[in-house]
Image (cartoon, rainbow, N blue to C red; front, side, top):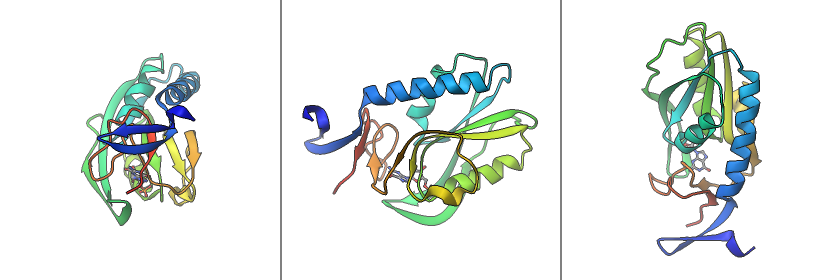
Length: 180
Ligand code: 5GP
């Protein structure tokens, strides 16, 4: 495929999901979410920082009344999971008895999500569902159903569209395979 490679700072990155494919999939997901949440006035929560592009594009494709909030946890160093998860930024809104939709960039081991799900559930929302753009093979450790998934992928490390490698590459316009 001709447009399969993106040259970024003279580094060639192989495309996994190009911008147009992501746009189309995010639109589909937004419509499905809008149908499921009509008249529910959900709180849609972005998991910072990786979820930021997916979250901002997705929420614009959900044409119903909703509120936005942000949460941040830290669990990942380089390309290997450090194993511990720490809450860095909590929600600002009161989500008790609210329908909450948590938006994640990628589920790998599922450790981060498991931690955030139990934290959010402790605030007694009316319901909690998760949307993740990507779901990596073996992410079943979450122990909670991920209702909205963009794509299932293999074990490869990906960057772009919010996903970083050591803080870089988040602004790549699609999802790319990272190789050193
Ligand atoms: P988990 O706790 O599910 O193992 O990891 C979740 C977090 O690790 C994600 O929110 C993301 O920030 C990071 N992560 C996991 N896999 C990848 C990957 O392939 N690429 C990048 N850039 N980050 C990843």
